[in-house]
Image (tube, rainbow, N blue to C red; front, side, top):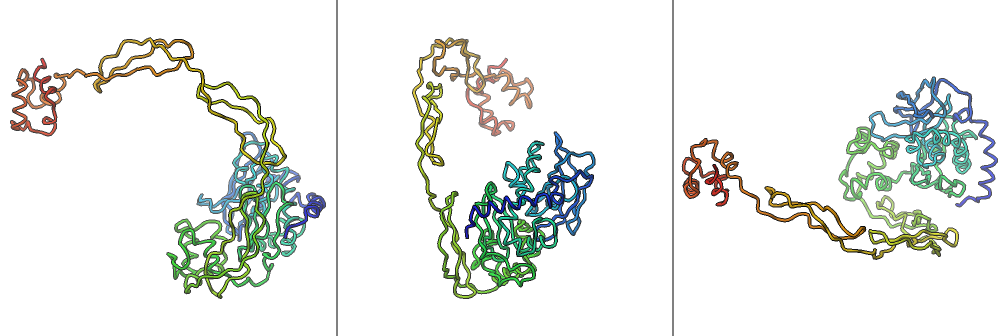
Length: 489
Protein backbone atom coordinates (compact mmCIF):
# COMPACT_ATOMS: atom_id res chain seq x y z
CA UNK A 1 0.00 0.00 0.00
CA UNK A 2 1.51 3.34 -1.04
CA UNK A 3 1.33 6.04 1.67
CA UNK A 4 -0.13 9.37 0.67
CA UNK A 5 2.82 11.69 0.31
CA UNK A 6 1.00 14.77 1.57
CA UNK A 7 -0.14 12.93 4.71
CA UNK A 8 3.31 11.53 5.43
CA UNK A 9 5.05 14.85 4.84
CA UNK A 10 2.58 16.61 7.16
CA UNK A 11 3.25 13.97 9.79
CA UNK A 12 6.97 14.51 9.37
CA UNK A 13 6.57 18.19 10.02
CA UNK A 14 4.49 17.53 13.12
CA UNK A 15 6.73 14.85 14.58
CA UNK A 16 9.81 17.01 14.03
CA UNK A 17 8.69 18.77 17.22
CA UNK A 18 9.52 15.54 19.02
CA UNK A 19 13.23 16.11 18.37
CA UNK A 20 13.46 18.25 21.46
CA UNK A 21 11.92 15.45 23.53
CA UNK A 22 14.50 12.80 22.72
CA UNK A 23 17.62 14.77 21.70
CA UNK A 24 19.26 13.71 24.96
CA UNK A 25 18.77 10.05 24.09
CA UNK A 26 20.55 10.38 20.72
CA UNK A 27 23.20 12.97 21.53
CA UNK A 28 22.07 15.65 19.08
CA UNK A 29 21.82 18.76 21.30
CA UNK A 30 22.53 17.66 24.87
CA UNK A 31 25.08 19.22 27.21
CA UNK A 32 28.60 17.73 26.84
CA UNK A 33 29.33 14.64 28.91
CA UNK A 34 32.63 12.96 29.74
CA UNK A 35 31.10 9.52 29.24
CA UNK A 36 29.30 7.85 26.35
CA UNK A 37 27.45 4.68 27.27
CA UNK A 38 24.86 2.48 25.65
CA UNK A 39 24.01 -1.01 24.43
CA UNK A 40 24.72 -2.88 21.19
CA UNK A 41 21.67 -4.80 19.94
CA UNK A 42 21.09 -6.53 16.57
CA UNK A 43 18.42 -9.23 16.68
CA UNK A 44 19.74 -9.77 20.23
CA UNK A 45 22.39 -8.13 22.46
CA UNK A 46 25.88 -8.34 20.92
CA UNK A 47 29.25 -8.51 22.72
CA UNK A 48 30.84 -6.31 20.05
CA UNK A 49 33.99 -4.23 19.80
CA UNK A 50 32.93 -0.55 20.05
CA UNK A 51 35.08 2.26 18.60
CA UNK A 52 34.29 5.98 18.97
CA UNK A 53 35.70 8.62 16.60
CA UNK A 54 35.46 12.32 17.52
CA UNK A 55 35.20 15.43 15.33
CA UNK A 56 38.78 16.66 15.79
CA UNK A 57 41.01 17.19 12.77
CA UNK A 58 42.58 14.67 12.55
CA UNK A 59 40.02 12.62 14.49
CA UNK A 60 40.85 10.82 17.73
CA UNK A 61 39.44 7.45 18.72
CA UNK A 62 38.77 5.43 21.85
CA UNK A 63 37.60 1.83 22.00
CA UNK A 64 36.14 -0.76 24.33
CA UNK A 65 34.32 -4.11 24.15
CA UNK A 66 30.64 -4.46 25.02
CA UNK A 67 29.83 -7.16 27.57
CA UNK A 68 27.63 -10.19 26.91
CA UNK A 69 24.51 -8.07 27.44
CA UNK A 70 25.74 -5.54 24.85
CA UNK A 71 26.47 -2.81 27.44
CA UNK A 72 29.49 -0.52 26.98
CA UNK A 73 30.93 2.73 28.37
CA UNK A 74 33.61 5.05 26.94
CA UNK A 75 35.51 7.97 28.53
CA UNK A 76 35.48 10.92 26.09
CA UNK A 77 37.27 13.47 28.27
CA UNK A 78 39.02 15.99 26.02
CA UNK A 79 37.39 14.71 22.82
CA UNK A 80 35.32 16.84 20.45
CA UNK A 81 31.64 15.99 19.82
CA UNK A 82 29.70 14.92 17.87
CA UNK A 83 31.00 11.36 18.00
CA UNK A 84 30.44 8.60 15.43
CA UNK A 85 30.47 5.10 16.96
CA UNK A 86 30.96 1.73 15.29
CA UNK A 87 30.16 -1.68 16.77
CA UNK A 88 31.66 -4.67 15.01
CA UNK A 89 32.48 -8.32 15.61
CA UNK A 90 35.43 -8.66 18.05
CA UNK A 91 37.08 -11.18 15.71
CA UNK A 92 37.31 -8.52 12.98
CA UNK A 93 35.23 -10.60 10.58
CA UNK A 94 32.72 -7.79 10.00
CA UNK A 95 29.79 -10.16 10.57
CA UNK A 96 28.32 -7.47 12.86
CA UNK A 97 28.82 -3.82 11.93
CA UNK A 98 26.49 -1.04 13.05
CA UNK A 99 26.83 2.68 13.82
CA UNK A 100 25.32 5.57 15.72
CA UNK A 101 25.98 9.27 16.48
CA UNK A 102 26.22 10.90 19.91
CA UNK A 103 27.00 14.24 21.45
CA UNK A 104 27.80 12.55 24.78
CA UNK A 105 25.81 10.56 27.31
CA UNK A 106 23.60 7.87 25.74
CA UNK A 107 24.55 6.17 22.47
CA UNK A 108 22.76 2.90 21.77
CA UNK A 109 23.94 1.10 18.62
CA UNK A 110 21.44 -0.99 16.66
CA UNK A 111 20.10 -1.45 13.12
CA UNK A 112 17.76 1.54 13.54
CA UNK A 113 20.57 3.94 14.51
CA UNK A 114 22.74 2.48 11.74
CA UNK A 115 20.01 3.30 9.23
CA UNK A 116 19.64 6.84 10.64
CA UNK A 117 23.41 7.43 10.33
CA UNK A 118 23.27 6.31 6.68
CA UNK A 119 20.38 8.68 6.01
CA UNK A 120 22.13 11.58 7.77
CA UNK A 121 25.43 11.06 5.93
CA UNK A 122 26.24 12.54 2.55
CA UNK A 123 27.51 9.07 1.62
CA UNK A 124 24.12 7.42 2.37
CA UNK A 125 26.24 4.67 3.94
CA UNK A 126 26.93 4.46 7.68
CA UNK A 127 30.27 2.67 7.25
CA UNK A 128 31.57 5.26 4.78
CA UNK A 129 30.43 8.06 7.07
CA UNK A 130 32.44 6.54 9.94
CA UNK A 131 35.51 6.04 7.71
CA UNK A 132 35.35 9.66 6.49
CA UNK A 133 37.80 11.59 8.70
CA UNK A 134 36.37 14.98 7.66
CA UNK A 135 35.13 16.76 10.80
CA UNK A 136 32.53 18.58 8.69
CA UNK A 137 31.04 15.22 7.62
CA UNK A 138 30.75 14.14 11.26
CA UNK A 139 29.08 17.46 12.12
CA UNK A 140 26.64 17.11 9.21
CA UNK A 141 25.77 13.56 10.24
CA UNK A 142 25.30 14.64 13.86
CA UNK A 143 23.09 17.58 12.85
CA UNK A 144 20.80 15.43 10.65
CA UNK A 145 20.74 12.22 12.69
CA UNK A 146 17.71 13.08 14.82
CA UNK A 147 15.76 14.36 11.83
CA UNK A 148 16.26 11.09 9.94
CA UNK A 149 15.36 9.10 13.07
CA UNK A 150 12.13 11.09 13.30
CA UNK A 151 11.34 10.44 9.64
CA UNK A 152 11.89 6.71 10.15
CA UNK A 153 9.58 6.78 13.18
CA UNK A 154 6.93 8.47 11.03
CA UNK A 155 7.04 6.31 7.89
CA UNK A 156 7.21 3.17 10.07
CA UNK A 157 4.53 4.38 12.50
CA UNK A 158 2.29 1.28 12.20
CA UNK A 159 5.30 -0.95 12.99
CA UNK A 160 6.50 1.12 15.97
CA UNK A 161 2.95 1.53 17.28
CA UNK A 162 2.52 -2.26 17.14
CA UNK A 163 5.36 -2.59 19.66
CA UNK A 164 4.20 0.33 21.84
CA UNK A 165 7.18 2.53 20.93
CA UNK A 166 6.58 6.26 21.40
CA UNK A 167 7.92 9.38 19.68
CA UNK A 168 11.45 8.59 20.89
CA UNK A 169 12.19 5.19 19.30
CA UNK A 170 15.30 4.78 21.49
CA UNK A 171 13.64 5.53 24.83
CA UNK A 172 12.53 1.97 25.65
CA UNK A 173 15.33 -0.49 24.89
CA UNK A 174 13.19 -3.50 25.74
CA UNK A 175 10.42 -2.61 23.29
CA UNK A 176 12.89 -1.68 20.55
CA UNK A 177 14.79 -4.94 21.13
CA UNK A 178 11.53 -6.85 20.68
CA UNK A 179 10.93 -5.03 17.39
CA UNK A 180 14.50 -5.67 16.16
CA UNK A 181 14.09 -9.34 17.04
CA UNK A 182 11.18 -9.53 14.61
CA UNK A 183 12.28 -7.26 11.75
CA UNK A 184 15.46 -6.61 9.78
CA UNK A 185 16.78 -3.21 8.55
CA UNK A 186 18.92 -3.26 5.38
CA UNK A 187 20.50 -0.26 3.62
CA UNK A 188 21.80 -0.75 0.11
CA UNK A 189 22.63 1.87 -2.52
CA UNK A 190 20.74 4.59 -0.70
CA UNK A 191 17.58 2.53 -0.17
CA UNK A 192 16.35 1.24 3.21
CA UNK A 193 14.34 -1.97 3.31
CA UNK A 194 12.60 -3.34 6.41
CA UNK A 195 11.64 -7.02 6.28
CA UNK A 196 9.78 -9.47 8.51
CA UNK A 197 12.45 -11.86 9.84
CA UNK A 198 9.98 -14.72 10.21
CA UNK A 199 8.41 -14.55 6.75
CA UNK A 200 10.91 -12.54 4.72
CA UNK A 201 8.08 -10.22 3.62
CA UNK A 202 8.97 -6.59 2.84
CA UNK A 203 7.37 -4.21 5.34
CA UNK A 204 8.79 -0.96 3.97
CA UNK A 205 11.18 0.15 1.25
CA UNK A 206 12.14 3.68 0.26
CA UNK A 207 15.05 5.99 -0.60
CA UNK A 208 16.95 7.51 2.33
CA UNK A 209 16.88 10.84 0.52
CA UNK A 210 13.05 10.88 0.48
CA UNK A 211 11.65 8.41 3.02
CA UNK A 212 8.15 9.85 2.66
CA UNK A 213 8.05 8.53 -0.92
CA UNK A 214 8.63 4.95 0.26
CA UNK A 215 6.11 2.12 0.17
CA UNK A 216 4.64 0.47 3.30
CA UNK A 217 3.23 -3.08 3.15
CA UNK A 218 1.04 -3.55 6.25
CA UNK A 219 0.16 -7.11 5.19
CA UNK A 220 3.76 -8.14 6.00
CA UNK A 221 3.84 -6.74 9.57
CA UNK A 222 4.87 -9.21 12.28
CA UNK A 223 2.33 -10.22 14.90
CA UNK A 224 3.86 -7.94 17.54
CA UNK A 225 5.34 -8.69 20.98
CA UNK A 226 3.96 -11.77 22.65
CA UNK A 227 2.34 -13.07 19.46
CA UNK A 228 3.18 -16.67 18.62
CA UNK A 229 5.32 -16.77 15.49
CA UNK A 230 3.58 -17.81 12.27
CA UNK A 231 4.08 -21.25 10.84
CA UNK A 232 7.52 -21.01 9.33
CA UNK A 233 8.23 -22.01 5.75
CA UNK A 234 11.51 -23.88 6.14
CA UNK A 235 11.88 -24.34 2.39
CA UNK A 236 11.52 -20.60 1.76
CA UNK A 237 13.97 -19.84 4.58
CA UNK A 238 16.42 -22.32 3.05
CA UNK A 239 16.03 -20.68 -0.37
CA UNK A 240 16.65 -17.19 1.07
CA UNK A 241 19.57 -18.05 3.34
CA UNK A 242 21.23 -21.33 2.26
CA UNK A 243 20.61 -22.20 -1.38
CA UNK A 244 23.26 -19.87 -2.86
CA UNK A 245 25.99 -21.91 -1.15
CA UNK A 246 24.47 -25.40 -0.72
CA UNK A 247 22.34 -25.75 -3.85
CA UNK A 248 18.58 -26.33 -4.30
CA UNK A 249 16.77 -27.99 -1.41
CA UNK A 250 16.01 -31.19 -3.32
CA UNK A 251 19.72 -31.81 -4.01
CA UNK A 252 21.24 -29.84 -1.13
CA UNK A 253 24.75 -30.73 0.02
CA UNK A 254 23.49 -30.60 3.62
CA UNK A 255 20.37 -32.75 3.36
CA UNK A 256 19.54 -34.21 6.78
CA UNK A 257 21.44 -31.56 8.77
CA UNK A 258 20.00 -31.11 12.27
CA UNK A 259 19.05 -27.78 13.82
CA UNK A 260 21.90 -28.13 16.33
CA UNK A 261 24.49 -28.76 13.60
CA UNK A 262 23.22 -25.80 11.58
CA UNK A 263 23.37 -23.52 14.62
CA UNK A 264 26.85 -24.80 15.51
CA UNK A 265 28.06 -24.00 11.98
CA UNK A 266 26.64 -20.48 12.25
CA UNK A 267 28.17 -19.92 15.70
CA UNK A 268 31.59 -21.16 14.52
CA UNK A 269 31.37 -19.23 11.21
CA UNK A 270 32.06 -22.55 9.47
CA UNK A 271 32.47 -21.97 5.74
CA UNK A 272 31.53 -18.31 6.21
CA UNK A 273 28.17 -19.14 7.80
CA UNK A 274 28.61 -16.57 10.58
CA UNK A 275 27.14 -13.72 8.55
CA UNK A 276 24.92 -11.14 10.20
CA UNK A 277 21.90 -12.49 8.27
CA UNK A 278 22.38 -16.08 9.44
CA UNK A 279 23.18 -15.05 13.02
CA UNK A 280 19.84 -13.20 13.04
CA UNK A 281 17.90 -16.42 12.39
CA UNK A 282 15.79 -17.40 15.36
CA UNK A 283 15.98 -20.93 16.82
CA UNK A 284 12.52 -21.53 15.34
CA UNK A 285 13.71 -20.52 11.88
CA UNK A 286 16.80 -22.74 12.16
CA UNK A 287 14.53 -25.62 13.23
CA UNK A 288 12.24 -24.97 10.24
CA UNK A 289 15.23 -25.09 7.86
CA UNK A 290 16.39 -28.37 9.43
CA UNK A 291 12.88 -29.80 9.06
CA UNK A 292 12.82 -28.83 5.39
CA UNK A 293 16.19 -30.54 4.89
CA UNK A 294 14.90 -33.75 6.50
CA UNK A 295 11.70 -34.17 4.47
CA UNK A 296 11.01 -35.30 0.95
CA UNK A 297 10.38 -32.49 -1.48
CA UNK A 298 7.54 -31.74 -3.86
CA UNK A 299 7.86 -28.82 -6.24
CA UNK A 300 5.48 -25.97 -5.48
CA UNK A 301 2.92 -24.49 -7.78
CA UNK A 302 2.73 -20.79 -6.96
CA UNK A 303 -0.06 -18.28 -7.27
CA UNK A 304 1.29 -14.75 -7.40
CA UNK A 305 0.04 -11.24 -6.83
CA UNK A 306 0.29 -8.68 -9.62
CA UNK A 307 3.69 -7.31 -10.57
CA UNK A 308 4.50 -3.94 -9.03
CA UNK A 309 5.18 -0.90 -11.17
CA UNK A 310 8.61 -0.90 -12.79
CA UNK A 311 11.08 0.79 -10.44
CA UNK A 312 13.78 3.26 -11.36
CA UNK A 313 16.36 0.47 -10.88
CA UNK A 314 14.75 -1.55 -13.67
CA UNK A 315 13.10 -4.21 -11.52
CA UNK A 316 9.56 -5.02 -10.41
CA UNK A 317 8.37 -7.38 -7.71
CA UNK A 318 5.38 -9.49 -6.70
CA UNK A 319 4.32 -11.59 -3.73
CA UNK A 320 3.29 -15.22 -3.36
CA UNK A 321 -0.45 -15.57 -2.72
CA UNK A 322 -0.32 -19.35 -2.25
CA UNK A 323 1.98 -22.35 -2.74
CA UNK A 324 0.57 -25.83 -3.29
CA UNK A 325 0.61 -28.64 -2.28
CA UNK A 326 1.22 -28.26 1.46
CA UNK A 327 4.85 -28.91 2.41
CA UNK A 328 6.13 -28.30 -1.12
CA UNK A 329 9.48 -26.68 -1.81
CA UNK A 330 10.73 -24.34 -4.45
CA UNK A 331 11.99 -20.86 -5.21
CA UNK A 332 9.24 -18.46 -6.25
CA UNK A 333 10.15 -15.84 -8.84
CA UNK A 334 9.52 -12.62 -6.94
CA UNK A 335 11.47 -10.13 -9.05
CA UNK A 336 12.12 -9.56 -12.72
CA UNK A 337 13.85 -7.05 -14.90
CA UNK A 338 11.74 -4.42 -16.59
CA UNK A 339 12.15 -1.26 -18.60
CA UNK A 340 11.26 1.80 -16.55
CA UNK A 341 9.41 4.56 -18.40
CA UNK A 342 11.95 6.95 -19.83
CA UNK A 343 11.93 10.16 -21.81
CA UNK A 344 14.83 10.52 -24.20
CA UNK A 345 16.86 13.71 -23.84
CA UNK A 346 17.37 16.29 -26.55
CA UNK A 347 20.86 17.72 -26.09
CA UNK A 348 22.35 21.09 -26.99
CA UNK A 349 26.14 20.87 -27.32
CA UNK A 350 29.12 23.22 -27.39
CA UNK A 351 31.35 23.27 -30.48
CA UNK A 352 33.76 20.39 -31.01
CA UNK A 353 37.26 20.97 -29.70
CA UNK A 354 40.31 20.88 -31.98
CA UNK A 355 41.39 17.39 -32.99
CA UNK A 356 43.84 16.07 -30.38
CA UNK A 357 47.03 14.16 -31.00
CA UNK A 358 45.19 10.98 -29.87
CA UNK A 359 42.71 11.31 -32.73
CA UNK A 360 39.71 12.45 -30.70
CA UNK A 361 37.85 15.68 -30.14
CA UNK A 362 35.32 16.50 -27.43
CA UNK A 363 32.40 18.75 -26.59
CA UNK A 364 30.19 19.46 -23.55
CA UNK A 365 26.45 19.39 -22.94
CA UNK A 366 24.99 22.89 -22.77
CA UNK A 367 21.46 21.69 -21.93
CA UNK A 368 19.32 18.53 -21.81
CA UNK A 369 15.55 18.68 -22.23
CA UNK A 370 12.96 17.88 -20.98
CA UNK A 371 13.69 17.88 -17.22
CA UNK A 372 14.20 14.39 -15.82
CA UNK A 373 14.99 12.87 -19.21
CA UNK A 374 17.52 10.08 -19.69
CA UNK A 375 20.06 9.37 -22.37
CA UNK A 376 23.75 9.19 -23.22
CA UNK A 377 25.12 12.34 -24.80
CA UNK A 378 27.79 11.95 -27.48
CA UNK A 379 30.73 13.84 -25.98
CA UNK A 380 33.64 12.49 -28.03
CA UNK A 381 34.28 11.46 -31.61
CA UNK A 382 37.16 10.22 -33.69
CA UNK A 383 39.00 12.66 -35.91
CA UNK A 384 42.11 12.79 -38.04
CA UNK A 385 44.79 14.97 -36.47
CA UNK A 386 47.10 16.84 -38.87
CA UNK A 387 50.20 14.69 -39.37
CA UNK A 388 53.65 15.62 -40.69
CA UNK A 389 56.19 12.83 -41.10
CA UNK A 390 59.38 13.27 -39.08
CA UNK A 391 62.93 13.42 -40.40
CA UNK A 392 65.20 11.93 -37.75
CA UNK A 393 68.83 12.53 -36.89
CA UNK A 394 70.33 9.60 -34.97
CA UNK A 395 73.32 8.91 -32.72
CA UNK A 396 75.82 6.19 -33.70
CA UNK A 397 74.80 2.58 -33.19
CA UNK A 398 75.88 1.07 -29.87
CA UNK A 399 78.19 -1.94 -29.68
CA UNK A 400 76.47 -5.25 -30.42
CA UNK A 401 75.07 -6.71 -27.19
CA UNK A 402 75.28 -10.34 -26.16
CA UNK A 403 71.55 -10.56 -27.03
CA UNK A 404 72.35 -9.73 -30.67
CA UNK A 405 70.96 -6.20 -30.77
CA UNK A 406 72.38 -2.70 -30.92
CA UNK A 407 70.60 0.57 -30.24
CA UNK A 408 70.75 4.26 -31.02
CA UNK A 409 68.90 7.38 -29.90
CA UNK A 410 67.11 10.19 -31.70
CA UNK A 411 69.19 13.36 -31.68
CA UNK A 412 66.47 15.42 -33.33
CA UNK A 413 63.12 15.06 -35.10
CA UNK A 414 61.95 17.72 -37.54
CA UNK A 415 59.71 19.55 -38.14
CA UNK A 416 58.18 20.37 -34.71
CA UNK A 417 54.99 18.40 -34.02
CA UNK A 418 55.78 15.76 -36.63
CA UNK A 419 54.79 12.10 -36.27
CA UNK A 420 56.58 8.88 -37.06
CA UNK A 421 58.34 5.82 -35.66
CA UNK A 422 62.13 6.13 -35.39
CA UNK A 423 64.23 2.98 -35.90
CA UNK A 424 66.06 2.64 -32.59
CA UNK A 425 67.16 -1.03 -32.60
CA UNK A 426 68.60 -3.51 -35.10
CA UNK A 427 69.83 -7.05 -35.07
CA UNK A 428 73.59 -7.74 -35.05
CA UNK A 429 75.97 -10.61 -34.57
CA UNK A 430 77.56 -10.39 -31.14
CA UNK A 431 81.28 -11.31 -30.90
CA UNK A 432 81.99 -14.61 -29.20
CA UNK A 433 84.32 -14.25 -26.21
CA UNK A 434 86.44 -17.40 -26.46
CA UNK A 435 88.46 -16.59 -23.34
CA UNK A 436 85.28 -16.24 -21.29
CA UNK A 437 83.95 -19.52 -22.71
CA UNK A 438 87.26 -21.28 -21.87
CA UNK A 439 87.03 -19.97 -18.29
CA UNK A 440 83.39 -21.11 -18.00
CA UNK A 441 83.64 -24.56 -19.54
CA UNK A 442 87.33 -25.65 -19.48
CA UNK A 443 89.44 -23.91 -16.84
CA UNK A 444 87.74 -25.76 -13.96
CA UNK A 445 89.24 -29.09 -15.12
CA UNK A 446 92.26 -28.12 -17.28
CA UNK A 447 93.48 -24.80 -15.91
CA UNK A 448 95.41 -23.26 -18.80
CA UNK A 449 96.85 -26.61 -20.00
CA UNK A 450 94.46 -27.01 -22.93
CA UNK A 451 94.86 -23.53 -24.35
CA UNK A 452 95.96 -23.75 -27.94
CA UNK A 453 94.06 -26.99 -28.60
CA UNK A 454 92.48 -27.08 -32.03
CA UNK A 455 88.73 -26.83 -32.52
CA UNK A 456 88.65 -30.31 -34.06
CA UNK A 457 90.45 -31.90 -31.11
CA UNK A 458 88.14 -30.17 -28.65
CA UNK A 459 85.07 -31.34 -30.59
CA UNK A 460 86.47 -34.89 -30.81
CA UNK A 461 87.03 -34.99 -27.04
CA UNK A 462 83.44 -33.86 -26.43
CA UNK A 463 81.98 -36.31 -28.93
CA UNK A 464 83.92 -39.26 -27.38
CA UNK A 465 83.31 -38.08 -23.80
CA UNK A 466 87.05 -38.12 -23.26
CA UNK A 467 87.81 -37.42 -19.63
CA UNK A 468 84.07 -36.87 -18.98
CA UNK A 469 83.84 -34.05 -21.53
CA UNK A 470 80.59 -35.34 -23.02
CA UNK A 471 78.42 -33.33 -20.57
CA UNK A 472 75.16 -31.79 -21.71
CA UNK A 473 76.61 -28.30 -21.30
CA UNK A 474 79.68 -29.02 -23.51
CA UNK A 475 77.62 -30.85 -26.12
CA UNK A 476 75.43 -27.72 -26.35
CA UNK A 477 78.39 -25.58 -27.50
CA UNK A 478 78.09 -24.46 -31.13
CA UNK A 479 80.91 -24.94 -33.64
CA UNK A 480 81.42 -21.18 -33.51
CA UNK A 481 81.80 -21.24 -29.72
CA UNK A 482 84.28 -24.17 -29.92
CA UNK A 483 86.27 -22.30 -32.56
CA UNK A 484 86.34 -19.22 -30.31
CA UNK A 485 87.64 -21.36 -27.39
CA UNK A 486 90.39 -22.81 -29.63
CA UNK A 487 91.35 -19.28 -30.74
CA UNK A 488 91.39 -17.82 -27.23
CA UNK A 489 94.83 -16.57 -26.09
